[in-house]
Image (cartoon, rainbow over all chains, first blue to last red; front, side):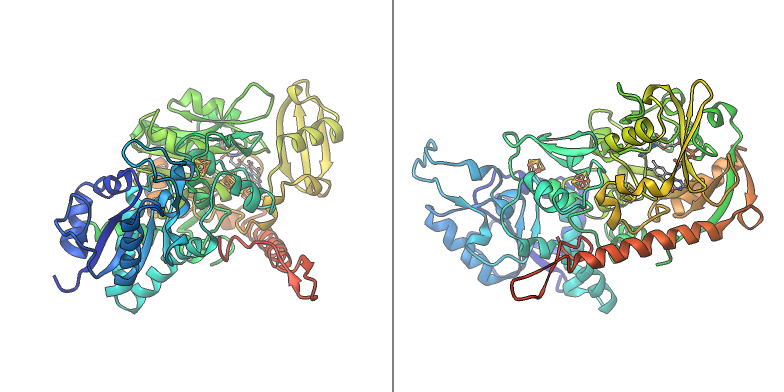
Length: 253
Length: 295
Ligand SMILES: Cc1cc2nc3c(=O)[nH]c(=O)nc-3n(C[C@H](O)[C@H](O)[C@H](O)COP(=O)(O)OP(=O)(O)OC[C@H]3O[C@@H](n4cnc5c(N)ncnc54)[C@H](O)[C@@H]3O)c2cc1C
Ligand code: SF4
Ligand code: SF4
Ligand code: SF4
């Protein structure tokens, strides 16, 4: 279909959990592929060997600097896509690959893994390990509206995607400590508990109403910080939550 | 948006269930609505501020029975991080329809988790009822202790009820003593995060409620979303509330609006001042982060 957008997934050093997450939209994935997006590139799902031109490229995994092919493919994907997304915590922040120091079974020399923004410019972040199926779905629908919608839809999609683009500008390091640096130290935390609720490895506990991070347990996925309502909160989008959730639900029916 | 947020109707109301009003803070709106929603299968459980080992220190809990809701009724003027159970409620507790109560910032967090479910897998469509309680400011537990024990001269464990109203913080003890302190002395104890808060009456809740605007023992209720509307109509039809039109009660909606305007204006000013809290070497303003502008 001509008015669909094209989406691809470039797989670098990740565990494939992000790819599986796309599939975790179940019938929603078929709806996305039927009406909104052609999947033009993805490990095991699409039989295409070389990075094609695409509207949106989701990059999973961090980039191994000792693996020439990864570096080349990442650069190629950047050149060939309109919007490049760091999809998941490894691509955005390094995540558990931050702890790599070589010595893997079949590739002992692979030891330098960096978030993809250290190699190429990134437009948008979807943090967390793994990201949530619903967040990928929302970004896919909004990307469609941004590229194919009318003026009003473009405006909504821009407002929606802006904070995720700002996260990409903010930097490529994140861990539970960001709650300390950019929320508590800044006098912004009000003890809602979202950070503790969102952490996939339960590294955050609430002590007398404020977050306490077990730094040995933190895998640097960035979920707590990006989900915290005091890291960013856009009133124009959130005040219209009923309309936006309705629109996304409607789009998926 | 208006300081009172979008709403479909504003009503003064009180629960008709005496078991609830004996324990609830004001008109028992929150406990009654959750009990009704449990009964009707609108929710499978609700995240509320339950009791803990320490007196007056709330511990978020998932309530699945009316008895549990009653144990969590009433206001604790200190932080209860209710959101920390939001994903857990759908996992360990296996709830498909989650109710949650929270102060305005917590309801904002609920909506962010739904619109941007970054680390909140399978949560967005499981939030079945988000009830908000008005909030001017909140206190750390240590601040509450200082207020009750140092200013009001009462032991935390001997307190039966705490209340804020008519410019005073009031403590009622088990043995019938009443201690008060002027609210303006409390401001220095308020957690800093509250100074950037731009919501008084939980604008993003399905239904929100507080005491201000209505007579003692009654609550002012805003019915806001389509979902909230359906639940409210159902509870009314079931005879769970007595109500009065808002324009016939004293002090009425004007006071709610006045307090909301005061809070938001004051805090907006604080947010703006943060932009220029210091000076760089060249004399240009050096500011703090504004969460409403960018991460
Ligand atoms: C910090 C704070 C400040 C408040 N400030 C105002 C105000 O300025 N003006 C005003 O009109 N009302 C204020 N309220 C709300 C008011 O105290 C009552 O909570 C509200 O009227 C509901 O009463 P109810 O009888 O309907 O609810 P109830 O049936 O008594 O139920 C109250 C519900 O709130 C939950 N809860 C109790 N404490 C907390 C907490 N700290 N955090 C999250 N959930 C909690 C309980 O678990 C329970 O489910 C404030 C509440 C809090 C917690
Ligand atoms: S999510 Fe943010 S505001 Fe909420 S408790 Fe954690 S750090 Fe504080
Ligand atoms: S504390 Fe948890 S949520 Fe936050 S970055 Fe670390 S692992 Fe991720
Ligand atoms: S004043 Fe605002 S930030 Fe503080 S507890 Fe109340 S709703 Fe939350």
